[in-house]
Image (cartoon, rainbow, N blue to C red; front, side):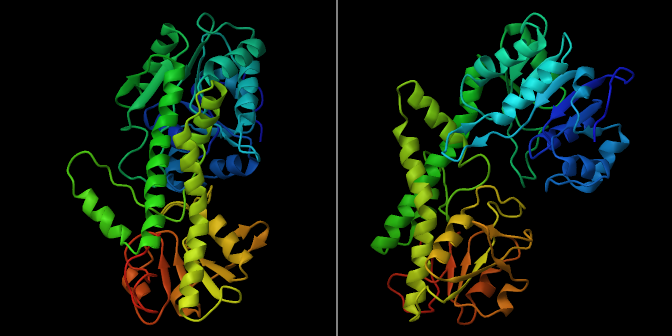
Length: 435
């Protein structure tokens, strides 16, 4: 629905463009801080749901949306409201194209719409993760061309990377340090003054490129370290070494070591995607980041390794993968979060299906799971069904490891101690996982 003309409307302190996992929590925080806020999204279903008090984001419940509406929040698919906003924050998605290249199409569209509606004196902030130079070399020219205004003179432009961690009850918008950088010192001043109303502390970056790169580094750091322990897990599986005991011993060191855990792969919007932006940028300036390239190869290989382990476990019971009944437990990318973006469950299921296995899934948060257009059957009671193998992919709270290990179940636990061990032990004996 379109909000229509804003000529006779009151001004908004803030317009949030993009009401997804980043934009909606930001809008909630802004309303809590007393800012008159409007949200803009291209999805009719998202906007209609919010207007009716329904949230589509797990970290924002319906009561929070109702509270926002009561405080004057409104949502629309129309961009006319942008001309009535003192601050416009862009929280649109930045993913990858089919060929693995950065996809800034949503940013381009949002900036064009903003430039066509913006009024002099407005502050525009980009929060979407992107490659270094996006704010200055992509957003600024489009904004100036579409508006006829000059950044640093007629309007203000800044970059402040989002740091939303879905499902994290400890850190949110208000208490997560906020990195801020403007295109000019005056832009930085305006952006800092705005974000000081929402977050504490504010961390001023030297420039927008530094802020953009800092965001990519944060997730690349995790990406590389996850790849290290994933590759270690594959080595330990081949060498008959208990990887979980190795990690537990190493984590006992009180300095110089940060623990990471292996798993079936990497998922979510940030970890599998953001390092690719940095990797592509590095190649463009002639300094390829080989560490990131290698980490990508390792992490993309992990789901296949899990499928290979599943096949080996089945064969340990005298069964071939083809025709075996395999149940995947937890197909979201993160425990307790109903988010399928880039979940390694897709690749694991794809490999098992290619081997001829009959694959079903259980996940209390996901009603439908399709792999390359093939719908997998959903199981309501995972422990009361007949399966040749259970594969624990995600540690949802409903999965009791003691119950998983009970009886004669064949279990591959990709998340921690408790799975049937492949090396050394006979069929059915419980031990530590190797993935």
